[in-house]
Picture 1 (cartoon, rainbow, N blue to C red):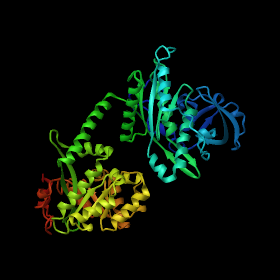
Picture 2: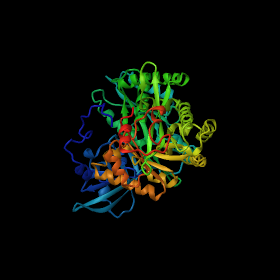
Picture 3: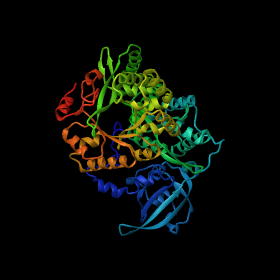
Picture 4: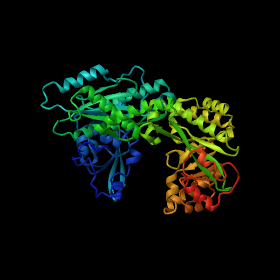
Length: 570
């Protein structure tokens, strides 16, 4: 959660003294129950002692301030706890009421007689009904949104009108469209619109100007800007949900940016721009919460705009160059492969880190021509070396999605004369987040050319094992963080050994990257690891600098003395 808003209310921030064990005791059902479409809680006498996020958001409070069950669901405690559904009226702290169904079940917890409460929300909240093509969102157009916000801020009835303007964009909505079709995608948008209207008060103004973008304005007292946190949390919980349709469970998240009026700006147009900048920052950081606008974002946009312009010039004036880092086969001690690494020699700023310009290239679409240049240049340079040397090229997930990678690989191999067996493409699992089936088909066709497919940064993603099962990679690269820690951390060492075993069982070669010490290399040699890469074997350098290293142009063995010279290579 962004910390730009003051954190003064008691529920906003847990005390520093709260231990992990205490948090677990307070919220043991948090991670699982928050994904439910029902409101779930545990009652002791007439108090809610645990509750999931859907129920907290609907009622409009946090657990610490949750009112008595008699206040939000009158008559509930008079209902027999027979696990049967009963009708009831749920009241929120905003004064709204919903017809719901609820059930109570006896529960023994910490030697106390408690009750488990499950509340089924009406269709517009639970999102479990089938879509209706004619059902609208009830949201206003952009022009009406602007008119409504400006009217509120200038109506003269509020001494100092204030509010939070939020820009929300559903993450990976294109994937929902491709996977489930336009009908269900439109229903998802309509359902989110209904949830916004149901959970927010009548004073809030909501619009969907285009596509899967939403504009939301929620007023709050000028004297209490911390109330903006509560609105941001509610909006976040509305978008971060699971919808059920035609047997499909669709998990939604969103990138959300916020701007405070009049604290950040007095002008509506500027507030929309600031909220959009914050939303893009949330998307870039893959933030699970909202991001508040800060002035540095404006300066960052100007800087990124300049770099984008300079990137275009860099392509046209050949400012890019490649460095190569060797990969050592631990069985033969030969350099059998080098990884091509992109560098940018800016005419005035010097060498710019790829970590700085690659994200900009991806956002602007320049990653496609840049990526094609890298692929061609790497293959062209390696084609001049002996036939046992391969080259590994990193492929951006954005490039893989936007470009015709199969055509790009075929064209490159044809133009450079490099055999497909001498090329490796390194991919991260982010490639599988969009257009999964199409990407798998593309990789299968590329692999049929003899090109090897490598999963990079293995071990740090959420679904690596599933991807290994679905697609037969040739090699997997253990993330450097595990190699760095394995000498001093038994858990890291266990993970490395487990990955080795997994790779061997699935007939995949295992590469250890980030090897910097002889001790790390010696430990790896006692495992089934086949290849190592890192500063110990050689730092990234132009291929001409590496050509004298044993094993790159001949079959010499790398001795201990050679490893020392490689470690100090430029």
